[in-house]
Image (cartoon, rainbow, N blue to C red; front, side):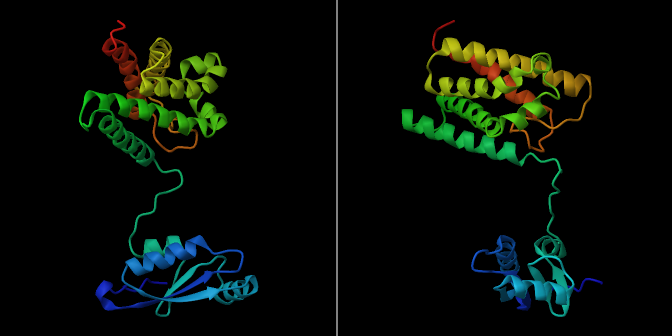
Length: 257
């Protein structure tokens, strides 16, 4: 069926939405579809399918397998994804490469670094803010890995040179990075934090450089956990180089070297 032209926001067009809303299940995609249509300027005729039997009859009548379903005029648009596509909104594929997790993580780390600096010295922009940002980023990256260490270790074994020789290191890495970040944030036990960060950062940097820039392998990065679609490369290399820099800087700043 050829798609009809959808009127603009000012057209005042009405869309009909059929979505599941039983006593024990309120379809989240139905809510998202309704919100999306309203943001496009549509007045939504919201038809609730309040029982499973009612929903089954609707799907049989319209020869569809899922709800919600959107109709504009006499044309059936489809479910949530189909409706977004109809309006030209891009959908990211399940396996599509993305840097969104990294952008979100480092943005939050930066804001937390500013917050720590403001609390400690009343100044947002300071060397302490940079230190705190990096330490927080290490903690957040560690937490991402610790959420599912098994999944992380599986992805990590694809490229880490030490983990390939000694598999338990693939499990240790997430704990080591988190511990180093926490200690650096506190400015405590630097004799533990600095060598730990230097070791895992150096091994990681060499491993990533070899896999990406020498062997030219196209892999997914385990830096934000074992289920990410972040490509292995600059981001993971930067993560490790930052750990190395912090491992050297913190003892210097504290007068230990």
